[in-house]
Length: 185
Image (cartoon, rainbow, N blue to C red; front, top):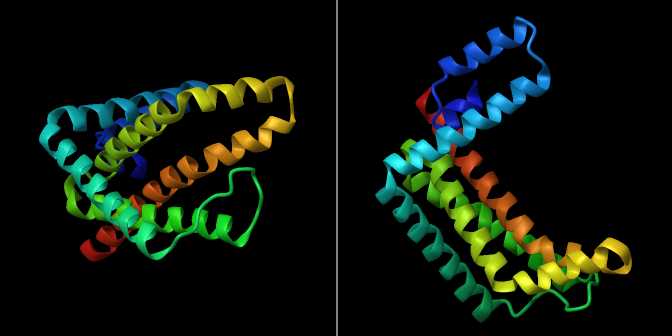
């Protein structure tokens, strides 16, 4: 299974899981096992390569620092405080997505042997950093959006940048691994 190779899991396990599925195990059981194996594979890779994980984190932070510096000096655009679709908002979200694709590609390219797990290290750190920076606002918007639909747009607007960052980082990592696979053929 290609997913297992990307995440550092023994590919033979994919065959074992498929055999169990053919013997009558449910689809839920199969996908739960795939998810567990993927999580364990990523954790094992990170645990055995702690220094590489720290290097991936530093690489991602450096790349994001450069993007932030360039963005603040050259492109004074941003997201509007009340959610509204405008040229600046769309440009900001597209810029976030594009720079994170580049960041994911850089991390994956500089950590070729374990590219996807190392990008996942940076994604985890970035997500926790973002959540800790605005946890009270996120909780307030989430709680308010449960019974007041008008807050759902604010919550979506609040979550849009981090969602695009995660999607961009994963896209960059997958783009790099695809390029590496094509180069190895």
